Image (cartoon, rainbow, N blue to C red; front, side, top):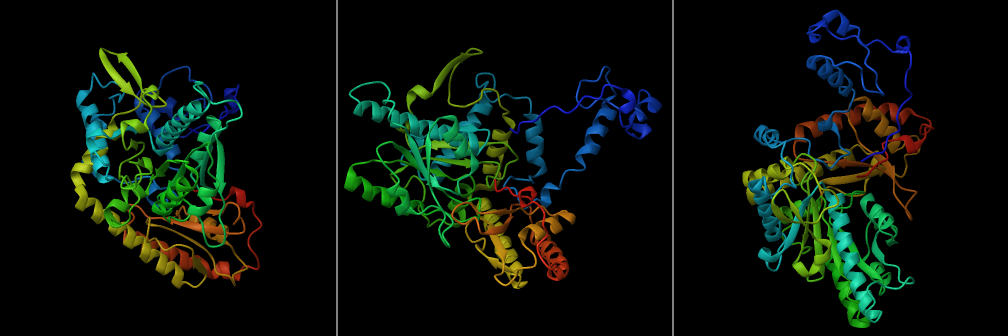
Length: 479
């Protein structure tokens, strides 16, 4: 989670800005509560009525953006009322207390089995998997498994020593477009990141370039099914083929982890002919975010390994907790069970046909939106929403008087959150707008967005040059 610094404490109550609260919310003391100015950076001395506390928090949160108009996030922002009721009923259940909440634990097990079947595990009954707080934790767990397996291989090469020598530094090969969780993994667990840069019109991992970066200390290659930069799939099968050829030449057996944070819940339903999952023998593990295109509110993710051999047993802790023997592989301990229940509800509610309908509709909305943005004539499409329902645009080559950061700022004035950012090396010259379409972002909302884009264009076309604001302060994120 984000790190925060405490604000300056206001020592004198005379310096506190008075908050005006409707007296009806101050049930205990209407006049006093109307003039109350609770401290912001220390605990208040006295309690306040629940309605007053609620209204204070509620009113401040009104200044947040509207999540339904947030085209920056991949996270689910709409679920059916029945799902919300189920989550409310389970909000007090701790997922870690599997002995106390055995049916919640059973629903987690069923979700793992369903995903193993969906991703064509050789033997779904023996596939190992777990729920997580999201794809970031799932990626950390998958990375740890890759590193521990490499450590065992290196130890065997070092004549039986338990760990490799100090000169053997593990490395992980991936495209420079990976999500920030992989940078964190490499930093936290002292793994060298070997990044394949972008080149020309290639905005993600190149199979041959990835193979060339591998050596005996490579713990694995990460392939992304759905780049957060532009929504494109990385060629997982081609990456595996390049590593097969590498093994034939050198004997190096490099596993592949598929980061399917978004695409692993899209491709199985609308790209059924695409081979990217456990059908490829080199794919060791897969993660996805249930709270993205798994269609569940945050936060829940999933990590699966094709067989027990892919997850070293020593990483699994067996805890005698509250009367039960509980195997667990996680970075944290307590976490809510409501999201796991919501995932199982969504699997039951939609089934394959339902997921196919939702993802196909979302893709059609993305494609239509991309075509309408393209038709304005001021933008150049980099992707068209035909893989993930996500696309990126830059300004047309002849546009010099405004840029994507200007467009993003103007759209924000109308409530639309559309991120603008620059690409990483070697395409730092390229700045883009990215549009993420999700379940609940309807064709009608897309039409309204296009109307607002068209409405701001005349003013932008009249500019003499892009506004000279700090572009780093724009909506420059691509999670």
